[in-house]
Length: 269
Length: 309
Image (cartoon, rainbow over all chains, first blue to last red; front, top):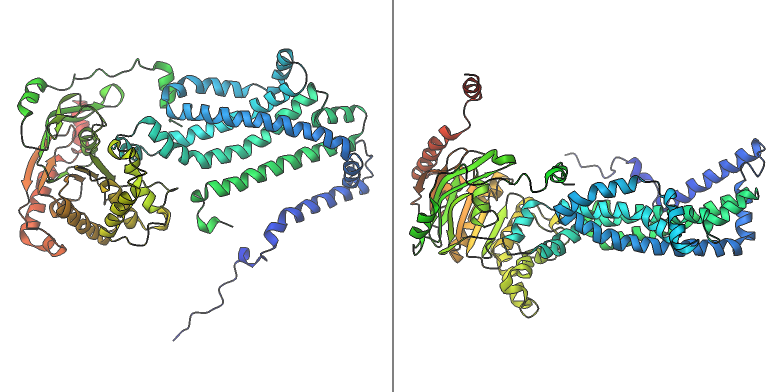
């Protein structure tokens, strides 16, 4: 009798040590930094062309005060703009996804609007609201609401017609359909869009700040560039990226928590 | 999102509304008068229905059907004969272009609220556990939705009793994707029945299941029906399923659909799997098959010849 072998055929992906997966982003990040540093040293690049990572880190530490002064502003305007776009995106998404008339009427308009380069809108916002926080928050909002609208609407519009029949034959109203089926169903789409939207919101606020503000990472970078303090420009980029990653991670966590039903256990980590 | 329809709507919202009643010749008003006071639980008289762009699809034409209270009717026919359209009409989700549908003596003029429905696809809500899925009707049906807090225990007992009856114990905290297709379909059946509807509409509910599971579920459904006697219309293309389950089997023609024959099934209940191998059962199945064969889509070459000439 042949006994089934205990040793399963080693699987390449299973073989990786369990600590390797969470460590992977750090390993890759450090590898990139080291090669960057090496390239700068080998080709003897001057700081104002491409600063070395070590120089950027040094600036991050020595300039921590001013950087935080500007970064906190960007964080504030981005959060306000993003909150606006979540509220507006949800409402608009529900309307577009639930009512065909709204869809037919607004969707082309939304696509058209989203094709407009938002940088071009900043001067108009400045004319309306003056220089400072308001245009930055609004630019963040304008950059980021579109994916939320599209995703929420998709979730609502793709409800199985049979499920709709089941509920309507029980006497369900439109509101029941949206609350009981449409919205829960579109939650995974919604969270996916939040992760895109938050990064876009940062792009929006930094663009606006770099054009028309006296505070914020965008301002910091423009001023630093005009002084040829390229290390400081890069420090600004790093801080923006870090804030983006942190927010993204936050929403990814929230998503995992809220829409666990959409993730099969074999995909759960 | 809406496919291409959104853009069509954009171009002519409301302009392409169909102009109804053109394709049908039935006289409605007199029929309504006749229907009042008749004992049939469901009576469908001369119903016509077209849909699609400019009514290009003529689904039903002059369809008559009656189902007694507590009866079990099966509707069989070639694919695409408008069986599912019939379901939408009976449930009030669609209005007929002509003809009249009455359920329990009242003309159907909007979605009925005494109906349970189940489809080939179990359509469970993946974010709710099994109990939550079965309890869904209580949150929607008018009669229950305002008392749902007080009735929670009673409702849950009903749901559990049904789950037990279809052979699903210990799964109420599980989620739909943790269940097999057959189990999901059982849950779907429970959801259709939990609010004790007077009328159960089944649209090929067992079509996607394997043969053994299907036969098992026939018995589950039959036992529930014997115990509760809800009026049932089962749409199917499985002739054996129709004969096994129904009191009356109605044969539909190809599109535009109408009823071309009705058969009583005088086999004693409860029917069990062995019945399906006895001669009278097989005879009925054969008879149905003979009647459906001429209703199958016409020879494509013949159609070509006709259009050319």
